[in-house]
Image (cartoon, rainbow, N blue to C red; front, side, top):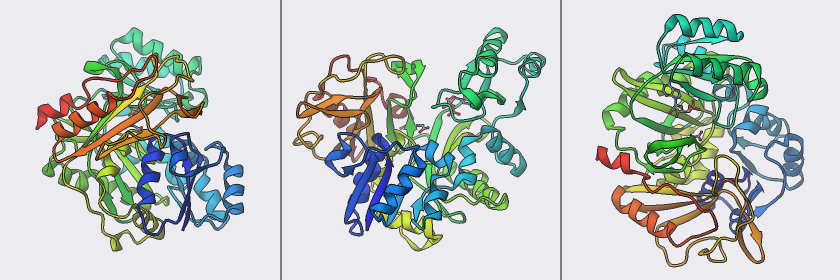
Length: 428
Ligand code: AMP
Ligand code: GLY
């Protein structure tokens, strides 16, 4: 099969490398891809959000299957557009992608079907939202823009003044554009966070190995929220007992709810969970593989990813095996200095071999998130630059290996957290 992966980050690199292991895969492309992905696939510079351009390219090149990975093309309906052109694609259609694209849709779905989540109200008027927050008088309070906001549309407000500022930023100044015309105001929950990615064909759901993201920029979970600075998998807080409860109370009910609403979800459904003192609750859904969770989870997949994806699309997920390697994975993200705020690009990267990997490291993969070719080598080209993943029989070993490997790579201004996995180790 000739496959196209839409997107160009670390997650797409991890998916693509896994797809290449499949005997069914004979040729693989990425659009737009990046310099590191270019070592594993052919790249075509089409923006992931260019629906018409992507469909035209897929027709021209006669792809047998297209894997649509990022949130925005899914929310725009790229899978619908490909299917209309008779090209099978992995990912939810536009109606099902609302589970991520609209927090109001997601919250209302959970309320209607009794899926545990933080208590909330929806507002279109900042004054009414503020009145509600004052009446409740409970802080911190969480204010979320309804639509997609590059992971930055969630504000945790410690007091009334901060809540006022958040509402002003989102609803009056329009910091996130139309995404902020409605907000969700919700109760603040506490507990360890767990990411669970799953495969679902709309009826059957198969969770993947759990993981733990590290969203803040600095050690000790300090600093600004980022796209994710590292991940460990499995997440030791997510015990077999909790997993069973999540299946009964959250995973199956969500898949059934989407079916009942007339928009069955086919693809990778991501559950962002918080293990609260009252049990597991949904913090967010994503309609896609998580980044960087994927870079920690897929290296542990023992089965054929392409076969699983085709079964998801074909509505026959029950027919394929989904099995996992024993052991653990750790991924350390190497970011540009200044990220998630302003940063420079074009810094030469030292330490990588010509294929974008590290020479002589067994069980280590370097996933390229933001790199470009420069003078025959690699240079930085984004906020998150590389994700270094190691797998090992245990989490401490995986962390040791990932950090040792990451230590061989340098570029000017490079920043990474030195405490990825520390919290997870406490739960072992
Ligand atoms: P989201 O974009 O919905 O994943 O939110 C980003 C982060 O904000 C989450 O990973 C949580 O750490 C935090 N968060 C979101 N909602 C809540 C909540 N209701 N209570 C506590 N923390 C939250
Ligand atoms: N790691 C969180 C996300 O992909 O949204």
